[in-house]
Amino acid sequence: MRLALLVARGKTQDLAPFCADFRGNTQLISAGNAAGNGRVALILMDYAHRRRLKILGHIRFDDASVAAPELLAAVALPDYRAQVERAAVIEVAAFDWNCPRHITPRFTEAEVRAAVQPLHDRIAALEAQLSALSVAGPS
Image (cartoon, rainbow, N blue to C red; front, side, top):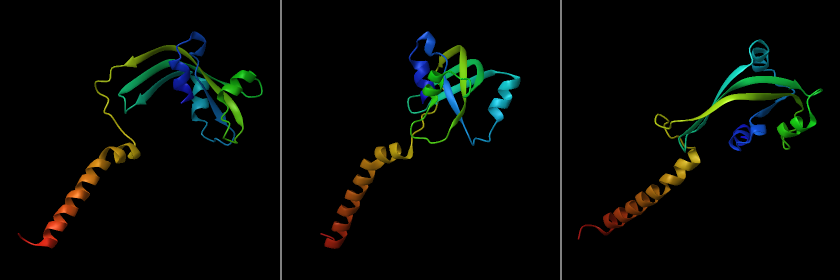
């Protein structure tokens, strides 16, 4: 979420998305890969609105012991108790809002449930009418 918000603001100084690497995260794949080759390509999807943002850039991991305090504050998650060990910074080389033509809209279960609730209500009403007619018998 923070990544998309920083890019969407469109200010030059904001085009360096941040994310935190927390203590206890034993998945060091990203940091290890970045040490050898810092090129990254991110594809951020918004299926419900059929939008796709492609970001190309170079990533670096700043250790918390030497990172700027404002960087650490930017990636901090107030409701998450884990300690930030590193901050990932992506220097954006290019980005593009991609054509929605081949993006299939996808929705959460709650969104689908809300969309079909009127259909369930109508079915229940029709079944109640049918039941009342069958109890009354043929006319």
